[in-house]
Image (tube, rainbow, N blue to C red; front, side, top):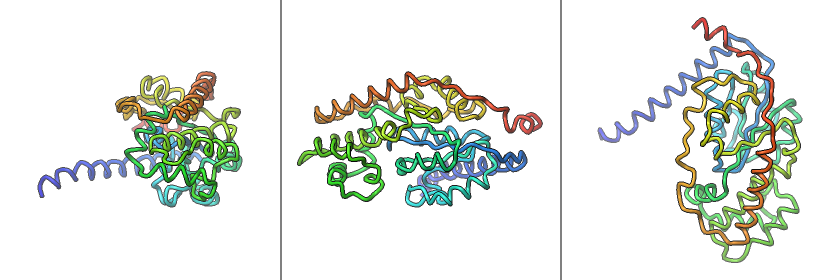
Length: 293
């Protein structure tokens, strides 16, 4: 009994601290009273490090962050109706309102237009590590990819499928496909939406490489903050670690699918290398409040 309580106590204390931090931040934002703010959407494929980026942004006093488990903005990890998000946006007093959009990638163009001038941070990660993580976190990947290839999947997985992507899936999904190969194809579908949705052509979108972020956190976080429009403070990014990079041996993926994913990963790397991280850094919202604290 004592052992069980000892294990529960750190988690409970951590939750109490998170709630206290949230109340403190909300209080500062109310005092500051700033209303004009930017909408930021954090996007990418599942298991690509989006939670880490969301936590990083949440550590800033200048953000109002909605994680995918927040019932105010999400229902079963899917974003609620745009009118609900608009109401949250209207009430927010933060400099930047941050919303995760993993299960709603196909809605990003419309959301960006509705909340213009919105911004997008798209996180991508080496598909091999994503596959390894998927195999631990999710089950029956082979059944999921077969449903997608059938063209009859009406879940959030299937809603973003274009005819071209569906054709690729049907050419690579074979009877008896294994879970690792199926998970790699799912990475291909979700990560490839960065190009299919045209974010590579938008100045309001930036790619964030998971591997670059964890290996060079300080300059990467500074560039992200500049783009988003918040102050880069020493505490931001302290939760970043690189233990998950190549943590497990590469999964065994069918050669044709591996080649397909390699091609997309190379394209993502090229787009990441060619982008320019430039944005105007506004004066810190809480500069006076913090200096008087």
